[in-house]
Length: 264
Ligand SMILES: [Fe+2]
Ligand SMILES: [Fe+2]
Image 1 (cartoon, rainbow, N blue to C red):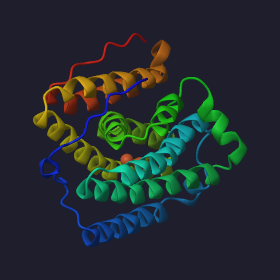
Image 2: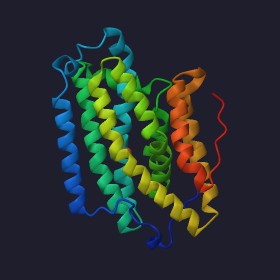
Image 3: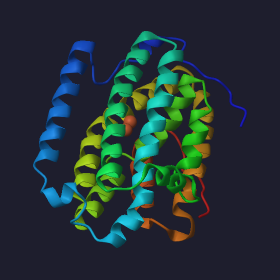
């Protein structure tokens, strides 16, 4: 996919919506970590050892665990690339804060796999099979342009996987006795919300600076959603997919983007 590069010529158009400095970020990150550890500590022992869920749940959940773990692992890598190539300091700082968040999410998901007793050799095959998020994240990992990475991964993918679909995942896990996954999803979404909002501020600034940037962003959205669509082929994960698109369009349509036509 040959891509046109766009960038923000006037960086003063972009402001980190969270207004974070290093000092404030480190305090926030420490607080989040403590809160997470306390929530995990409070879970019953059989939930932490995955003896409270049915064997059948675990069998099916491997794919979901992989769809949590590998996107977080990918995120630590693509956001590092975006930080390295960021065209201005304020954006670089947002990327570096996110890198630390994603690293923590990755640890939470490794913990789930390990506590559930799933051998590491089974993780990647579960992700590489058809119908997972693998194709999208592989694509993002090939990108070098920081703006394209942030639009596709933060604005589109996180914007879509934001509050709506993580709530579905958390509730679904909880209903099946997987309380640790529920705690993880609810912890992760507090950070993802910040990742989405700085990407949205970037997209808004790009469009305000040059209206023709909208066409490029639309194409990046279309490419991204097409790569995700295999998750929902044949009517699979219907509730999740609707939450996914719904979350995304709620932030994208007000900026002038159009829905992507997708045949499932
Ligand atoms: Fe994350
Ligand atoms: Fe994120």
